[in-house]
Picture 1: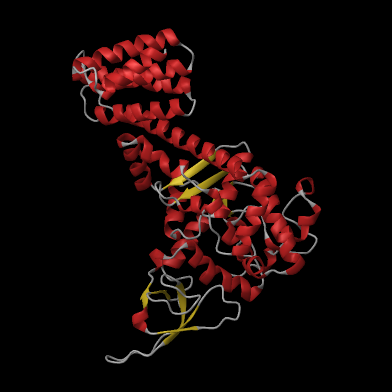
Picture 2 (picture 1 turned 120 degrees about the vertical axis):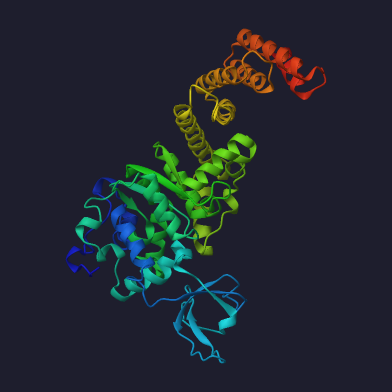
Length: 455
């Protein structure tokens, strides 16, 4: 991958934002630190494979500290080995490692038994930025975009997809997930490690830093609105790292303000775990989203955290930000569940009951999720299909699954103000529950009676 000097567009008079969208205080920061030109997914995959196969960063060895080696090198810190320790069969001499973030570039001494090898498959996006992208951009004082030829990047700003991701996630997961999410189509994606001037981003000071902070705190949301859509990468459905990172929360909020759908990219294995959790316990499936605490989200730099806090408190407040972010992510969750329902229904063997119970349980959980989030018409449609699946599974036999579906339909009718229809469904559910349990004190029967009393 050669250094393409002909494609360098970083003259002082040029900005990544068109005149229509500029704000004067942000011009210099925009043109010198951020460019809103995406990279192609084809390039991203090649870049990833070049790292995995050693074509890129072939001499780089990363290790993880197994002990606290210094005040700023704690257990788990990733370092780049600068000099391979001399080894014999009996002797291991100490080595030195580069620690990202140290302004004075003091190397860290270590013994081999104090560190553990970090294989390339475990490198995080932060590792790729710190040890592959940053040194190269520092050497030539440029963006990584400047190393790319025209076929590897978009030729106009804001083309394609804005990608929100937490740098602490594995880089391999990010690439493979985006590849699967876009169904292997070649799209342009904006990822900060390629599209920001990493040396200036981390080392700016004085007036340049103030302009940069203005751009990131305010202009970023303007930029996000101009992309075709936004995608957030979740490394895990249960504890997604982006929901604990202040920058990601701020970006998700910006995507919500754009009034465009926010897509969530999950690995196929994580998608299935999410659907399994939805079937087994709806509460746990939504817990990660409902319980986010944006104000406690962290940043690598304390100055960035303060900047985001000031922007939130000065513009919207934490309660409103959480409300908007949660609403956006719940919409994604509901849409994902609905899509899974349609796919499961299409796979059903209509001549038997193979997979039918799992499909019915997925429909039932999805109906409840929709009802609780005011998607009443969609919930009713899902519940009606679920009721048909129950009839196919159990026939006219009284079964608690059928009764729970009727109870869910009744709850939807109440929310729609259709009390007569709600009462009819509560009565039907009560009858089935009573046939199953035969005890007026059973919680299921109590739920049906409570609904009757309130409808």
